Image 1: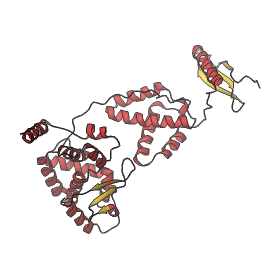
Image 2: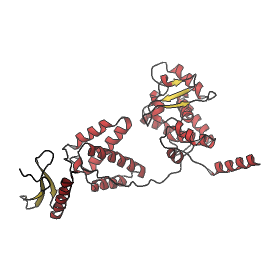
Image 3: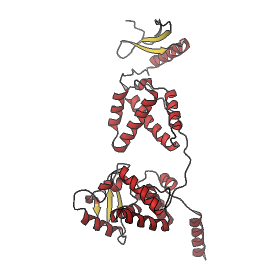
Image 4: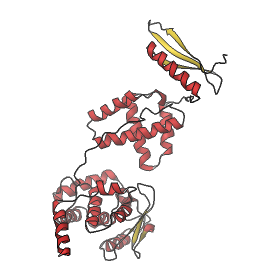
Length: 346
């Protein structure tokens, strides 16, 4: 064995088909063993890769890439995640594999990521959806680098496409009345209580359905959400005069079992079908369940709640999220604010 760890040889081989392929051969400075790497059929690329590898060996920044199959890599990366985020990463990696078919992480190239983006656009995915998938991939590739399955993430320096800001759908007072009436007519008191609970506590769907009776204080009164997006407990007080307290007391009597007030609503598919039927009956188009949370936050801020308090109650890590994605100010709100200011100054 040679004692020249910084030297890289290019080996030229001719296959039976007549095609010429090139490999790199060098001595690993850590294991002191021969290593090889396939570089394809381009002689110029082989020389470039050899020079690049020699520079890495000489600078002492060479990393010996471990071998692993794609499926094993996916399982290992997902094991570091938890809850819904783990499934998002798994789905993104599976779709990437279906499109690009990488045998292992080290085979992933930037061109593959570009092909995946084009595939998502051809499928009709919205910009925000594509960005979510790409963030899952970038997270996985960074962990691949830390696990020595990749020398460098192919998404380093990747710029995400900016999603156009959509107009937020805020529920009006009249629409709220119609929504409550339709929910009561179609599914009874409990669905109505679910809607009022969301408007009062700003609960996300998973937070509401994951709430346990042990975390509901009817004397306080308050609720403490454990199943939050940030994985941190979120305390939300309830105004004593709020009608929600009566709803919760009634639900507590009806659900005399372990669990929470809305645990049987955790089936997202079932709830999506019910919600579609409710908004159709109420004739309120394009209203999502999450729009109830946006409506509640917007109403609180327009009523004068300090933004930093709204951020805390909403459970947002960045106040920019609260102000940019959850608040919609209409012309009528601007007129009312100016009129109130003028009346106060008179």
